[in-house]
Image (cartoon, rainbow, N blue to C red; front, side):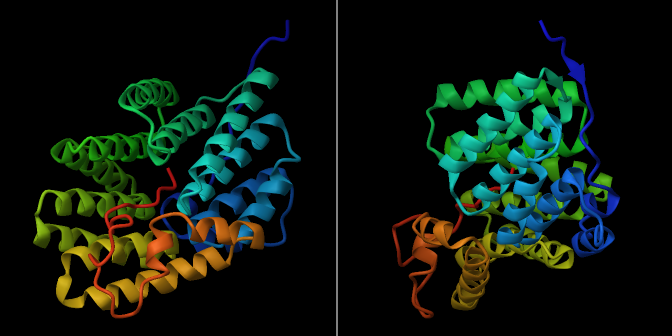
Length: 305
């Protein structure tokens, strides 16, 4: 029997985790190798440069098993950002199997995959039993990993599960915890996403002014990071709660979402355009009101968890 070995995934670096995405990408220029390509894939995905990110993932898959698993996990993260949840679940399953088959123990990568599997289940409309089981497994993996980043991501999926169940106060607590952890770590991109989720929970609780405040702050932080995938969900929430400027928010959301999807390889573009919320957002006319469609809700946030 092959004994398991413990390996540590390469660090993304402080610039990446503090939201300085372009600076972190610039630091990798002229460098190559699977671990470098994995870092590039993560950063490019966070910045919304999807085609380049998928190319980097493919190159990273030529590395050692731990890098292969991390690349598949990053690929799943990308698919979730454009609501391709079935593809994300396949990538997460392959990442986990890669670790199992190679007998590699990497608590941080395993935790990231397990958290991603909760998000996959939410996106695929899994029942309460599946969601509860996956949250429990993910929570155990995050505890083992001891990673603040995975702890924040766990609050996102816990909050998403609560939103699905209509437990908006519980969601509010989860997202608020994530925002505090991210803020304390100086992780501006993670803080931005937590605030945008928190805005969605506030809107669901009919706290419109608080939702506007949180969404605007999340949008400000996301723009400062260059995290385009967070911009359009924030604009969608603002279209719902800042009704006097709904058309402007929808127009900005549509332009950003369309640009992100256009960066995908051609075979994936149409598939992404057929998934809500992009499906109805991109079909809306410039003057169509935010609540003029029943095909999805502006509060449905694509996740990169």
